[in-house]
Amino acid sequence: MTTVRGYFHPKTATGTSSLIPSPPWRYSGDLLTVEYRTDPARVRELLPEPLELADEDPGAVALIWADWQSCSASGAELLDPVLSQYKEAFAVVRCTYRGQTYSRCVYIWVDKDFAIARGLHQGYPKKLGSIHQTRPHPYGPAPRIEAGARFGATLAAADRRLAQAVVTLREPSATNGFVNGHPMAHHRWLPSVEKGKGLALDELIETGAAAFEAGQPWVGDADLELFEAPTEELARLEIHEPIAAYYRQVGVVWDGGRLLESGTSGAE
Image 1 (cartoon, one colour):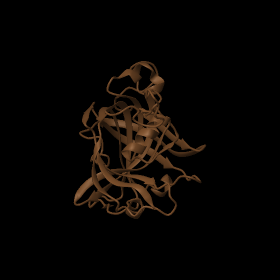
Image 2: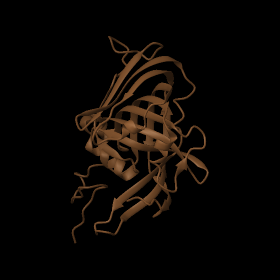
Image 3: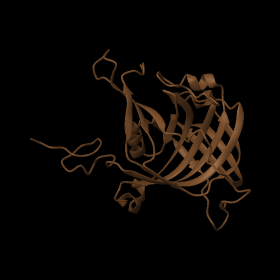
Image 4: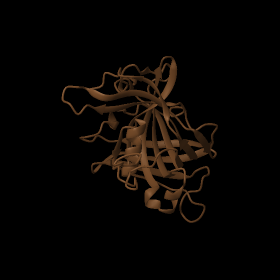
């Protein structure tokens, strides 16, 4: 009997070619977060049953840019940076499930295949994109982490720009915002290979950080623009009112989640 190994495709005799290693997955990142309010009806249309709008501030959205270094438990990928470095931009809203408030990623773009594979496992709706953000540095022209520092961020996909922002830091903050501050409620979906059979995998799951550490968050203001594109719908979460913008450096460990329920989303 032939045994194939690997946490994810492709599975081989050795497992070396697997696109991602088994968890835990460890992350170090610089995050730019822009929070604003949109029409709650536009949030509601992205929440399949049994999820409902958040009771408080239901139209709140966080658009987040992240510059990551990630690795498996061994940390070996950090010494082969093409396997550890990637960037992403993602939109987060809030929802409720059985009386508890959750965060939910409704759109997300990344620039590496291994990040897409991890997202499929975690229930993130990841797509390929082009993501860039200003990096801080203590020397030269790059901004320091201080009052008045300015950071730019851009997001594009399929050759179209989807979003751009300029964040100006104002002062240290007690928080890094509130929209992305809860456990995540995500769906894991996989259509059946048989026509007309619906979903072979239909799970509502809860995930979050197994461990978390972070530096001092800074709050500021943002000039944010969203753009229409033929294959993207981020601009439907149109900007009605700015809330605030934030910068923070974080360290996160992800090591699985838990099943909330299965087979009830009504997704097609």
